[in-house]
Length: 329
Ligand SMILES: Cc1cc2nc3c(=O)[nH]c(=O)nc-3n(C[C@H](O)[C@H](O)[C@H](O)COP(=O)(O)OP(=O)(O)OC[C@H]3O[C@@H](n4cnc5c(N)ncnc54)[C@H](O)[C@@H]3O)c2cc1C
Image 1 (cartoon, protein in one colour):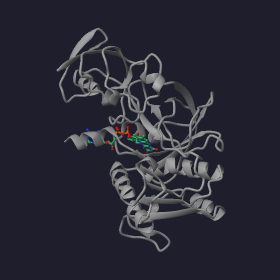
Image 2 (tube, helix red, strand yellow):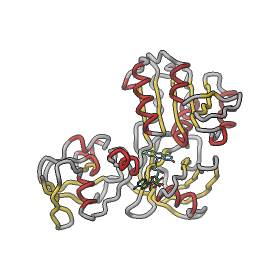
Image 3 (tube, helix red, strand yellow):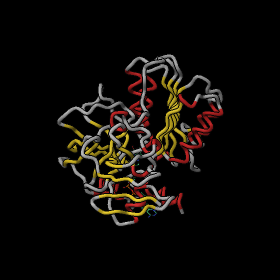
Image 4 (cartoon, rainbow, N blue to C red):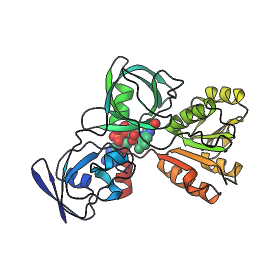
C-alpha cells in the first residue's frame, strides 16, 4: 500500500488500484472519461514523489517534465502528493452552430471557436458537459477545409454525455472543449504509400477527416475505406463518400453490413474481415482503425499478421467507462 495526499487529506491506495480508482473509491471526484490512458481527461500533477513513466505515455515532453500524469494509468511505487492541473490542458469555449442527424443514432455536432484550435483531422478533443464530466470525440473536420469543428456523436442509451448532446444541447449553446490530442492522423511523409482505413459506426468520424486531409494534400497511393455497420439504414455519409470516390481515382469506398439483410450494392461481412480478405498483403501499407474497441483490437492483430508494421498501424478504440466496468466484471 502507498499513500496519496490530495487537498490536505491522505488516502491509502491498494496495490491494484490506479490513482483514479483510489480517489473514486474514497468518494473524491476527479474528472475522467476513457479510463484507458487515452483521453487525458484525468490529467493531474504530482507535487511530491515520483510517478511512473507508464502514467505519462502520450503526454507532451514539456508537460511530462512538470510531473503531470494520467491518474487512470498511474500505479505509484512510493507515496505521492497530487493536485488537479493548474495548466497543461488548454480549455476553449465553443459555440454550437449546427446539430444535424447523420442517421437514427448519430448526429454531426458543429462547433465554432473564437480562437483557432490547432489540430489535425482525426485527432480527438474532450467535450465537457460540466466540470466533472467529459468525453472524447474525434474530429471529422479538416482545419484547412472546414470552417467549424465537426464531431459525429452516437447516442448511447442512458449515456451521460452523448444523451445530453442528442437531447438537450442546442444551437447557440456554449460548451467547453480541450486541446486536440491523439496520434491517429495523416502525415504526408510517404505520399505513395497505400492507406487502409477501417471503421465501425461513428468510427467513421476520424477516418472521414483523415481521407479528406490525405486527398487535399495530394496523396498518390490507394486510399481504401471499409466502413462497417449492422444494417444498411445505419450506414451514414454514403453519398458523400461515393461522390468522393468518383472524384478521386485513388479513393475506394466499401460499405460493409454485418447484419442479415444486405442490399446488392453493399458488401456482407464485418468491415475488418472484408478489408483483410480483399487486401491480404499489407506489407508497407499504413492502416487506420477506429471505432468499437473489439474491432480495433482484432483489426490491429490481423493487419500485423498481414504484413503491416506496428509503427504503420494507427488505432483509436472508442473506449467508454462502462466498457471498463464490463471488462472488470
Ligand atoms: C479517443 C476516443 C475517441 C472517441 N471518439 C468518438 C466519436 O468520434 N464519436 C462517438 O460517438 N464516440 C466517441 N468516443 C466514445 C465517447 O468518448 C464516449 O465514450 C461515448 O460517447 C459514451 O459516453 P456517454 O457519456 O454518452 O456514456 P457513458 O455514461 O460513459 O456510458 C456508456 C454506455 O454504458 C452504459 N452504462 C453506463 N453506466 C453503466 C454501468 N454501470 N454498467 C453498464 N453499463 C453502463 C450507458 O447506458 C451507455 O450506454 C471516443 C472515445 C475515445 C476514447
